[in-house]
Image 1 (cartoon, rainbow, N blue to C red):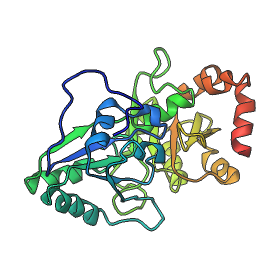
Image 2 (cartoon, helix red, strand yellow):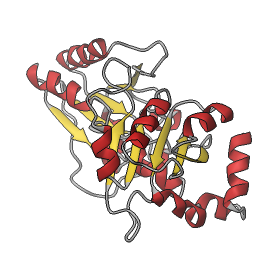
Image 3 (cartoon, rainbow, N blue to C red):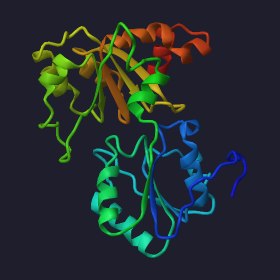
Image 4 (tube, rainbow, N blue to C red):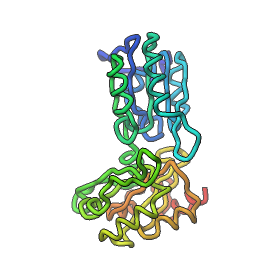
Length: 278
């Protein structure tokens, strides 16, 4: 196994044959991987990974068989039941299995569903949290999800339900009235419907909003917009998932906290134009 990133001395958990560890790979930047996830990569016999897991991360498991199990909305994807059953089958064959998921496995990652099936099958599991895109991705865009005096509450919500349609069990009116910052995962397709419901419930159409595409990667793009213009601006810019959408006064803090633009000596507006053009 590679010693490029030697782990400090510690009693690191040992992956036993016939077990499955469900780990978060973070939002994209390989440097955001946790040490526990790196420890798992170095031990696994098989890594079952999602579409958004970066290739560099997988290279830290040269000894492992790599099994792609990507799920992307609107594109051909593996069936969730088949993915979960494969985890069970691999573990029952005595393999050390790492299920590597983008972001955090328990934040809109179906990690809980997979874990339930594994436990029911008598498979030992371990959960390794990861940095979720709704926090890490916004941080890379210079947007704090909470900031004293600006937004003391944040709601993380999915932009579609299990059927792939706009969520019907989400109380958008309650969210509109009760959360200062709204962070929407997988919401590009239905942002028009979602925005209309939030505005109908009292949110200001001119409220600042942002769209972060391919967050934390070299392909990251950030679109500054408003709640009312979000759908049209996304279409005009030709932006596509994966993307995190956020709505709230806290988005204004990006004007001074866009650290990636500052590192390049660019004003935030210059950086935005470059990202949109790229």
